[in-house]
Image (cartoon, rainbow, N blue to C red; front, side):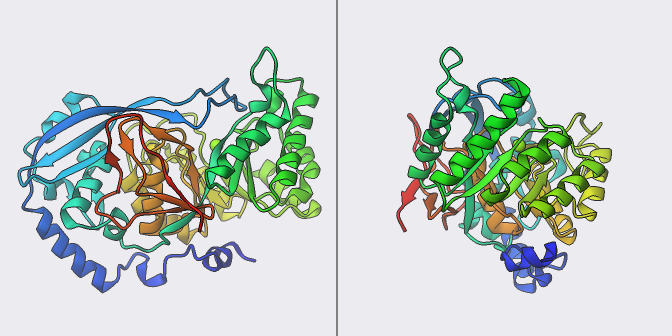
Length: 418
Ligand SMILES: [Mg+2]
């Protein structure tokens, strides 16, 4: 099936009318919404911190040693002169935020676009604030072009077999991690591969195959994604594909540093051995753009290379990072990806609120194939308006993002049996 046809068949596609030319009803609504926002002026910001608590402490991937159990990050609550409050993840220091006190919301945010360039640091905060004022979920404010129940995978299946270092538990540890996330509602797992980084090369490559096959055998009803974090050579990766050809992989992410010949050989080999996985790429970058532009912090040459490979159908799924690009910019560039026939699955490891932001993006602009999941909670945050059901992340029909503050250990996603 041609990739564009695949996207349409998957229900990912924005309808043509939603693409570039927004439908009339939505345009009328955004004009009215902008007027409602015009009455509000930001009068203060409050800061609080949230520390993630992943479902378990995580082992290494092909790039870095053990990943631990989560990080701390700042959130801001913006309050307007009308008493409306919006909450969102927001990294910059106080002196960067302070100048926005006194600003009119309508000067910083347009529901049909997102934040202005100058207000990009408030991306999540202002999307939430505007949604709260309008009484609309963020996805609806973005046009509601995608489904509100989106496939999600556990992105937390690291190399647990290598831990603890003194007495590694072996393959059963990976199966236990999958089981834990299965019990939380996930039905797709992304396995970190590239164990040659930590083992003798042959042993590591063999273990990657062994782990993949073991997960397939134990979870026959689940999707398996694999992510090598560019840790393989082309030749070694072709051997891996041969070893797992009958495992029905859903996607292969960053097998090696992307280049035309390598990806062409990989696609050719996959075809020969009957591996139908999608190729996901575009997360890792080596440099930063001299200043923020349409593609956020990504360099022009990185973007150019990505689209050259995508045009040749050597990459199927774009995993640009949600933070490196930015939420508003994701809204803007999604139609470009779709025009190229590329599905999106923004990389978002490792902040637990990010999958929820990404789910709104998926429901709002469409074209998101699957959402990376981070099993766990964020201290002082309540995610329980979001549900995980049949392996899908369900976005709540509530004003703003539907993430609220909750002093204490944090409240996770609600699991629903059906
Ligand atoms: Mg990755």
